[in-house]
Amino acid sequence: MSHGPATPLTARAAGPLQGEAHVPGDKSISHRSLILGAMAVGETRVTGLLEGQDVLDTGRAMQAFGASVHKEGDTWVVHGVGVGGFLEPEDVIDCGNSGTGVRLLMGAAATHGFSVTYTGDASLRSRPMARVTDPLALFGAQAFGRSGGRLPMTLVGAADPVPVRYATPVPSAQVKSAVLLAGLNAPGETVVIEREATRDHSERMLRGFGAEVDVSETTEGRVITLVGQPELSPQVIVVPRDPSSAAFPVCAALIVPGSDVLVPNIGLNPTRAGLFETLRDMGADLTYENPREEGGEPVADLRARFSPDMKGIEVPPERAASMIDEYPVLSVVAAHAEGTTVMRGVKELRVKESDRIDAMAVGLRACGVTVRDGEDWWEVDGLGTGGLTGGATVAVHLDHRIAMSFLVAGMAARQGITVDDAGPIATSFPIFRDLMGQLGAVFDTPEA
Ligand code: S3P
Image (cartoon, rainbow, N blue to C red; front, side):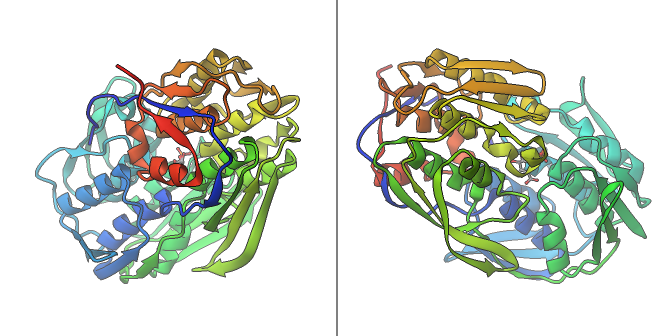
């Protein structure tokens, strides 16, 4: 669902950030819990679900497809309709701001014999959908969208789907997951091959629901084979806390003098934890406390302390997929390091909720930072601790992570930083302002 009028917000430098930051549930795992719950037969119970707008929009979509989704106390309960059991929605499916939501839903519904029309907010309507509709066409689904393969778009599902073998041309967990979800209702084996490993929550969760999924590392890349038309059994799911949300209090603590913040219970699945490794490579005082396994995923409490001696580095490009959502906030840390941070192999950043290289480059330059960029790379010249002037109002382009990144930057900038719209933060981290405020961050609403 689209949000209301823009709500500008300013973050200012104040005292140190201190205390514990309990960030919300993982967005990727939350979407998948609702979708796979809706495709199982019976009652799936989910705790720790991210109640951000993106996930709520996916929950409403699942209801439109015939599943029941409701909340009992702290638990979300999904009554699924079984693989192949979706009903034709009566209305357009509005996925709001969520690329994950729309792309996974398109996949899940593509092998059902009915049509669905999808739309979203201005950001989502500008994002490329051919990356999912191309492989879905191989199952027999047909897409009719706006020019450039953009939403609104109607997907005519395949009544007699055939299984597919597909090598993803871009490193994208959304594309991989869309194909696997479509493969659920196709007979035989659906195979996805990815050259670079992307987040593997779909594979893990499909197995958890009882699907047969084989993953092998070959010279072609990671080959994922799914046996179609399983009966999925309902699950009890505890959603781990989101490393992509943890990134904001962690990075804020590293750049605000005197800070010491604990971020408990963060999933450190290697396909997601690239930012934390990169920060440690830069010399950040970031430790993993109490490392353990929960629900088959590595988990730890992250402790981040103010780190005045961080150095710019060349981020290994092969790490990009494991930290793709974290480059915006990494660029804020890079602006506080000594020397240049180089980020290559990151073309995907140009087609996220906004063109994230451009949005960060423009905003950082307005705050006094030198940034150079090309199609699939960018570099940030660090100013060292306390070097950021700030004082600017930056445009977030309906992008939650751009908004949070610049608010984090504002917490260490001499003149604060204003974002033109903090509304999009509600898509992934609705408690951001309260949580950061409890740590000691100071926000105010600029005069109109
Ligand atoms: C996601 C995959 C990533 C990521 C997004 C969530 C997912 O997108 O940016 O925030 O849950 O599968 P791509 O698959 O387009 O890289």
